[in-house]
Length: 262
Image 1: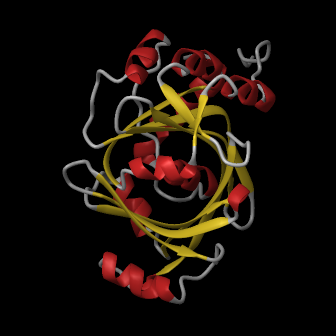
Image 2: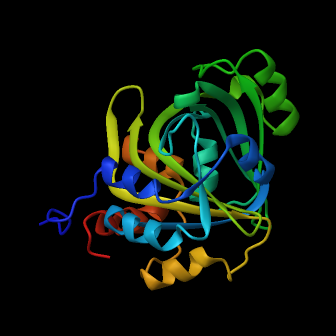
Image 3: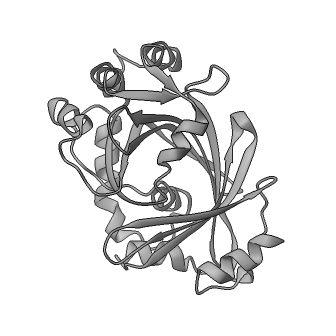
């Protein structure tokens, strides 16, 4: 039996709690964009989100645009025919890429993005603005991908659409952003899958600073660090015939977290 059945958290609860935070504008939060950064990722059950937010309200401001504090995102990920970007992640290869369109639904803003994970653990993101998500890499994105990766644009095809909601917090005292993703849904252009009751939190810093309040709060709530690629887990769930041995223990762990056993 799902242990969460008696204490569900709904979207209205989250929105109500976010009203207790001071706001930060998009213009101000872009001053701490941290496109070259260190990421610390945590995954936990949705039932811990409200207690976490309650403990963080005095240390962070929440991104607010036109009164909204919980935003809808869409990402379309591209890979080669044989899923070489996914395979690089699965095999633990460093110097690896993710290539995607990302649309900020509520502001109708779209970017074509390249994320590069270096061999020393840094995440470097480059992007250009586009008009909309496309299922082809075209126009200025062709030169962009060929200037910033070892690949050609026509090596890629769309593999996965991801829909989710995001909260973005900014530290009041330091150069630090903190994103909280929930309500993940996947579409592989044939079938839908989802990852219910999970929250993915990512602390983005120039260098990891363990004295940040968020790490203390995670310790209080017994939330442990756990890497999770939304793209890779989505591929595992959406393309069951692909090799996924390395991710199977993680999928089992995510199921336990989602069901409230951890």
